[in-house]
Structure formats: C-alpha cells, structure tokens
Amino acid sequence: MRSLGFPVMRCMQALAEHHWEPEAAARALTGSEDPEVIKRVERKMSRFLQSIRRSIAEGTEQRLFNNLPAAYHAALSAAIDHLAKR
Image (cartoon, rainbow, N blue to C red; front, top):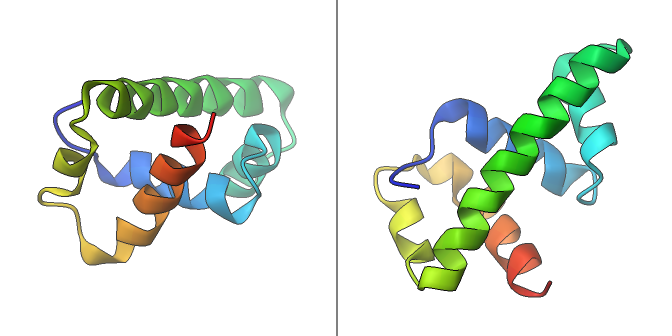
C-alpha cells in the first residue's frame, strides 16, 4: 500500500471506535441496515486491513503515515497495533 486515502482512514477510525468489529463499524459508517451494503463495506475494510498487514510484514508500516493528515494518525496507529498483535 503506497498511501492511505480518506475512505480508508474513515474505515480505520470506525473499526477502532467499534472495537475492531467489522459489522458494527460498517453499520456506523454507512448508516444502513441493508445486509448487502454492510457486507460490501466489510469486504473493503478487510482489503484495507490486509494491505496494512502486508506493510507490517514487510516492515514498511511507517511509510503509511507519509502525507497522512494528522487527524488520522491515531486511527492508523491503533490499526497497526491491533494487527501486529495478531
């Protein structure tokens, strides 16, 4: 993953706020109860997390902070910490 965009960071914030429960985070993010919408957002979250896992495995996770607005640093740090423990 070269950089993280705004939608990715909103997903990371939602996941952190909802204790890493993808379904709860997807519901909060979309404001929807439609199972298809929730599953679609959960799949995207899963892809984002896989990219962060890859960066952790490669030892390049600090690059993810490059050009990232400071408002999202805490969410990214939480994601990295959460994934590094798994």
